Length: 212
Length: 212
Image 1 (spheres, each protein chain N blue to C red):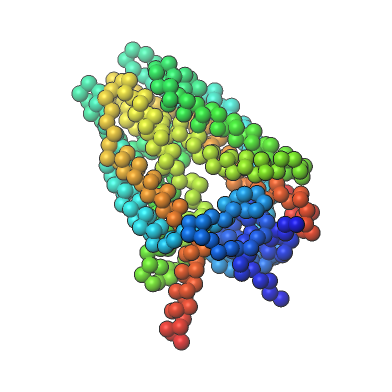
Image 2 (image 1 turned 90 degrees about the vertical axis):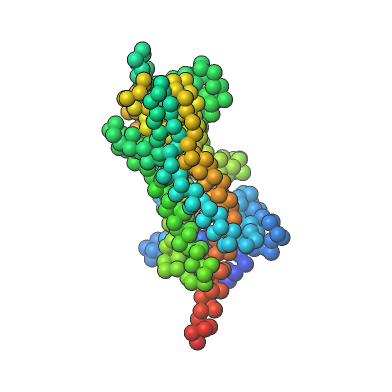
């Protein structure tokens, strides 16, 4: 039978991983070694993660509908949303890049929203199903989120290089704001989620109290 | 009442308590329950991290001064530096996106490098820096928000996009950022918090021994 740190009255410091004696939130315990705030479980993990996730879902809509870039040349005006930018890359022959941008800015955000929702619902219900798979899902989710920023950086570099005095002008569109918000909010959501909640339903003497 | 915590580790992702074992050279320890990475034997951790971080800092400084890329369109030459990508967005009214790029591509990476040098350089010289625990917590907190690797991918994508309207040449900063990513990754991979704290503690004992 595996014992957890909480079962033994210990708290692991999330910054330096030192084990400290458990204390209640009201005592505002700090790590003896690095001084970081200690929590048995991240405070309000599920509520906070849901809140960030809901906000990310709301921003996801304008992020995909509003243009992220305006491109103007003497001959044509073009506004690109994220998806039309991907299609544009693909039709001009840069297949590899089209795939990279498509995965980073379309697949990753939606996969992250779904994955976080799955993790949260399962943790809330104290689910016992596919625990190891959920642990892996969390690890992947926490890692990939930042790569969605790629489209923001593409836009930033394009805008910096192509200004009015050239044959073309590239301007940022409002979609970029919403898209940046989605990336930041999903990152905050996965940071607020405490992966230990996946394992807490396995029991142990102190299992019941600290959920949520 | 004291709880013996020496030789015990708690998993950051599932809280399972397990015994620390002596690791073979370059050996790694994973959680018995959820498989999360717990610790790795990193020979000469502090020295190697310091060396990599110094190299990364030099390259990052270069990357902030020289142009990322040059654009050649019908005789008009234009180049953009890292900060120009922020300025371009800001001048077009996208201050929130500009702030996001400024933080993730410039400020956070600079803080991260600064903090690592602030911790490791004095330790190497036999001094315990003021506020070492605080510096450590800062390094831990900013880690997910440094996104230079994603930025470089974005810059490369935009280069390909621009080849359709003009001639584009990669600049010194782009190569410097590439090198920075390699050294930073190597530095983070060689860093082991355990080793640093142990080093600091033995240093503390020695200093107290001298004074007594």
